[in-house]
Length: 150
Image 1 (cartoon, rainbow, N blue to C red):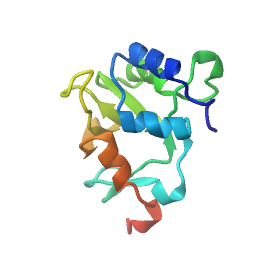
Image 2: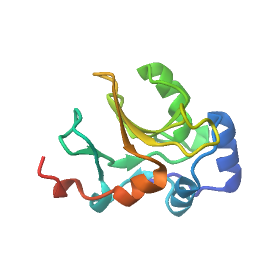
Image 3: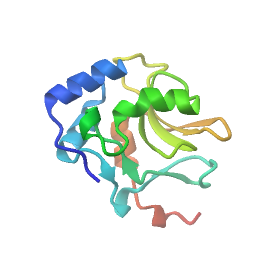
C-alpha cells in the first residue's frame, strides 16, 4: 500500500522528528511513490554473506512518510518506537524491515546532516552489515532477488 502523496511540509516535519536530514535521493523517490512494495526487478541488494543469504539482502518494501492519522502501515516516522522495541542503535532511520532484520540509513558516523550509509541489521544475531556507502549507491545496486543463485 502506498501512503498519501508526499508534501514538503511532511518532509520537514519528518526530518525534525527524526533529527536528521534525509537523503535528497530518498525524498525524490518518495515524491514519486510514497512507500510501498518494491517491484520484483529491484527487490534485493548485493551484499556480503549474512543471515538472509550468501550474496544479497532483501528489499521488498520501502517505508514512506505519513503523519499518524494517515499511517495505515509502518512509516519512517515509526523509527523511534522501533529502535526502542528492537533495541537497535541510534541514530538510524529504518527504510524497510520486519523486526528481525532491517535496512536503515545509519547516521552514527556521518552525523545528522551527513550522507549516511545503508546498513543491514539482524536483531536476532546482532549483526550489522554495510550494504551501500549512501542511499543513491544502494538504489543503483538494486536488482531482482531471483537473479541470485542463493
